Image (cartoon, rainbow, N blue to C red; front, top):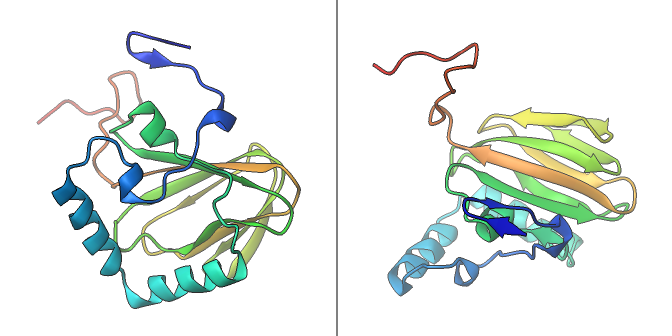
Length: 169
């Protein structure tokens, strides 16, 4: 259901979008530039991606590209769900993008690996990680769902009612 400026959607109805071809409204040139950026990933991230692909060939089969579906431009947001033992988020550190991220456990149980430390989390728990922090997540229970939200630090402007609001300079 949607109206002028709002949308309500069941997250399970939002499909994944991994390839630049799936991104709406990109020109051919923009797609080629996106592919070139993917090829220039740091070697250690490329190695982690390749290892994850070998170990978890079904990775991402229940990915939800929320940002693309809703047309969000202020921040990145997606979700992934999986069953016990499945990888939800590949090991990555966001160095190439500079993103800080927050992961919210919506359903099930998750094992987060953060800079070599393992933490189990249940619904309502969240993990915040700055760029440069190596992190990954795996499902501990079937039907686990984790929401991921990210963006570039310093780009958000708090509203006037927030305790950290400051007048524009």
